[in-house]
Length: 343
Figure (cartoon, rainbow, N blue to C red):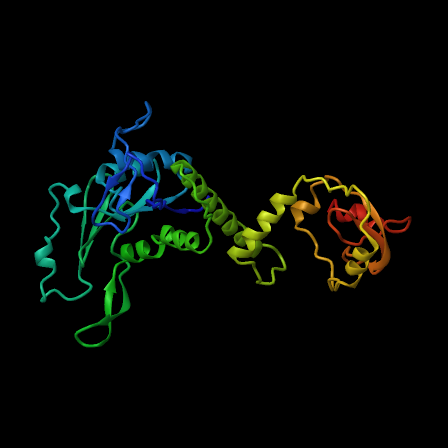
């Protein structure tokens, strides 16, 4: 599991009408699902509807190894941050000022005055389980149990009045939040590129297709991470579209027996037409999952000799695998057919 984790809400767009919905006029997606009850288990604290969601998701997070959870102001509160702190899980997120009772942070009007320079900030630290609260202009309130203002760094931002870039101060808490709080938005952009588009009148089927898209993107990210750690990695990875096509091909062929052609042979005219068709330049190797599935592998004799597709084998053979459709040596000296389907 990664050290830095992100929790955020996501919209699953659908036009299916249903009574389990709520209207949000200020959101790009106006309608969302809403439940009536706050489900709470016996061994969980009741921190609120939104906070309880994160508590359940954090059950699988290991304790005492400095895992960090990021979230926005929809989930953040002081009791919730203190609960995670007691569970040995660090956290950082924006927080609504109405969830900070008796705070001494400056109000919105004093922070938005023209006399206050851009990039101004103020930090207050409570004595309640080491929870840091830092306020940054525009106006943003951040709450954290592991990071504060230090180290303050200079960043470049464009000034509309001066029409040039200026250097402003950036607290470390703001830098950490901006660096790691964009995962869900990036996930939405990936789903927008390739997604399952099947019309259905059942709303739960739309959720099912959405979860399939999430699983596909997560698999692609794991694939990129594992390939980058592989010795001798060349730096070339397939994109998301190619990855989805290869997964679909593997699922279609995995565990499938080769079809046996039956019936009368085709006519002489049909054989001549097929013989005149342009043949492919090379044989395409199947994906690894199909090659190693150990289902319906039979060597078939063909009239033309082709080079063996087993790596480091330079021989020619007339034996072809009927499922993979690749030429492989199958004789006393070389049994490439067996090695190809077992390594």
